[in-house]
Length: 92
Image 1 (cartoon, rainbow, N blue to C red):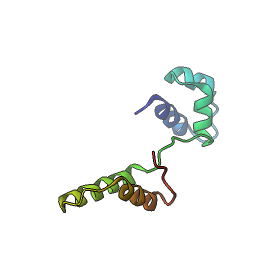
Image 2 (spheres, rainbow, N blue to C red; image 1 turned 120 degrees about the vertical axis):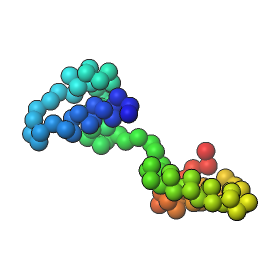
Image 3 (cartoon, rainbow, N blue to C red; image 1 turned 30 degrees about the vertical axis):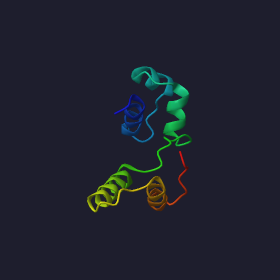
Image 4 (tube, helix red, strand yellow; image 1 turned 60 degrees about the horizontal axis):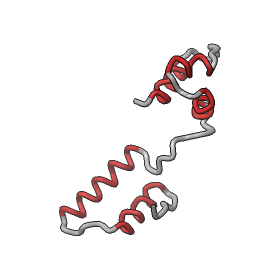
């Protein structure tokens, strides 16, 4: 687990209303204070298009197509990803 995720898990594990300082937690885990603050307040999120569950579904779909000897093209994968993510996926 990345250090930033460990720091957020630590903050989330604190009792409701318990005081903490982003500076101290950031130093404990060796992460940037601003990034930690933004990520914890959900202002900044990782740029993942698919969740781990959706990614597993995509892998299953690709394996199924390959097993049926229909190798998926980039456009097929992009279209399937767009359906899973419920938003358009870029071409890169």
